[in-house]
Image (cartoon, rainbow, N blue to C red; front, side, top):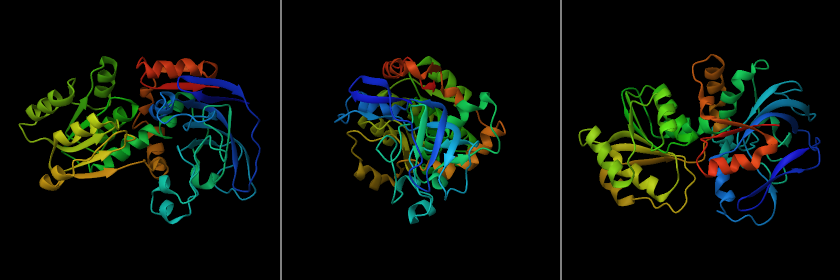
Length: 343
């Protein structure tokens, strides 16, 4: 099969790898219908952390089950499935508590026990604990939105849930990538009265408004803080969604959070320090982390299949898998919000 392999910073290649086969009783082999490039894939692509040796990459895909192991019960060959961005057994105490990204037996894609997601096929263990099947094979028009449930829509939802967004709130979303935009959609869906998106890019501003943003602030840093405080009459936000993971984005998140609010953070942290003294003085909470997309998947899938939400709009570029390297360049250069790949 063909699959994407990262060799070094700015060096991804489509290569021939062995076809996957069932290796254990809980395994499944999935033929990929669509996969995509994640913002978190850009960290190793840019050399953070360094790539020590070539490895398959990609952790978001949907597809058709081809084979299953003898103990798999919840999916079968022919099912259309969504795969969350980590493989979880579904039975450990953390999975049962709804935090599959902390599974005691968690497996990462492309790390030997599961194939990388940006390929033609993926073998993974723990099929029952990981994969979620649609009631029937969906129309192709639904594939992009179903694909977002593997990561970015579930992650945006986790940010909003962690920030305790409720009806009537004023919510500020820091970050205008696919996760931040899905955070806008999540906050709006949860009943926020005002959703403020921090974005400097016109196409992303437009999509944020489609997803429910009531206000757009294009400034950054202190200027963004001042703009939010002016918008909220000096009070600040009832909830803040931090969807980037940099020192500046976290600083901005706390700068605009009102006393008693919570910052929901889902950006992979890089160089972040938490202002614990300000949190103490103003009773500002911090919650979030790696989103347990598997926990949210059934309900969000229903929302997609019934047309309640259409998060697939975050894909503003679609490429054949053969052009995966160009997809990485487009996202690195911010010429694309999110790139969908078709094998």
